[in-house]
Image 1 (cartoon, rainbow, N blue to C red):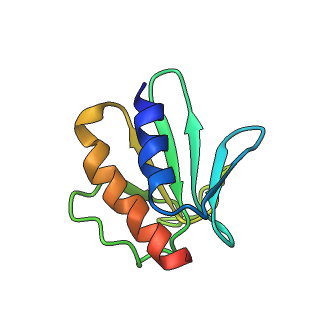
Image 2: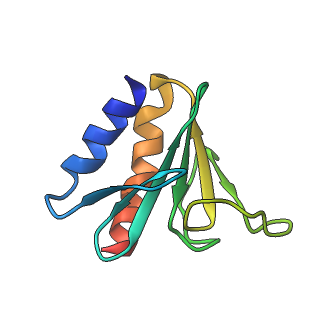
Length: 104
């Protein structure tokens, strides 16, 4: 149900957003992916297609995958956020909106 709430909010951003299921994650894209979502048993991993240093994250929810040294991952972008409960949905969604705005 947490994924469904997140999905509905992402799809409501723009009617041009397409949802592409991949082998390991679900890509949400306009011209390019702006967010990739990996649904796991205990949480949802979200990859934001934002370059390191460009994300405004006052709550420090996102992990920069380029520091201290690059970490390989399945999704696009330099940031990863874990969504474990509905309590953080709003803050995480604000980060997704930043990625959407940077990639549209």
